[in-house]
Image (cartoon, rainbow, N blue to C red; front, side, top):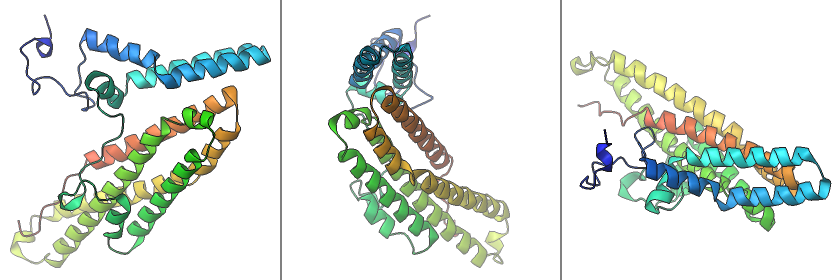
Length: 270
């Protein structure tokens, strides 16, 4: 039976969006387009060229194997990346989207959003995370052309981490405010059925605190790792870059899972 999403008359609303991970069902033709694009990505081809040159100079089969493994990993990751699907199928810019900033202003810089947070540990860690993000980006920008090419995929992932962390910090402060309101109205009749809500919010608060702290800890060594990639050559640089990108993917997945599992808290008066 044909997939109904592939019918010529299907509307845009009926077709799954490539930007919705877990809901996307690619048609065979779309799968072929994505796979072909993944094999022809400039980043992957650059790895093959550099690896080939380095293996020719060293006459080492180990470099050939490492180059092919790195290339296969890059193709595999790209073929499973919903952002890459959107880029190939719809021509969208290949970058990580973050949810709209508060007050309906999607262009509010992350630094300004962090300054709006109440003074305290959450704001301090968010500011620290943005500072580490800036330092890492400067290290990438100051690298040579070869290193910047190898690290090209890391840039949108770093931006995604920063945006998601600020989202979670804002949500954390919203939850903290709701908890304070619930505790202040604990004796009111309309609050008697909120014990479960309070416990859930407290768990969410702890999860946000733990993930923010964990992310800051993971961001701390990134600048030195970028510098290490820039001074390495050949297969060593490719391997270091692949490990860096894998860690960035893992950080984005954890932050996105936490952000997606939460929803704006209700007002205590509701």
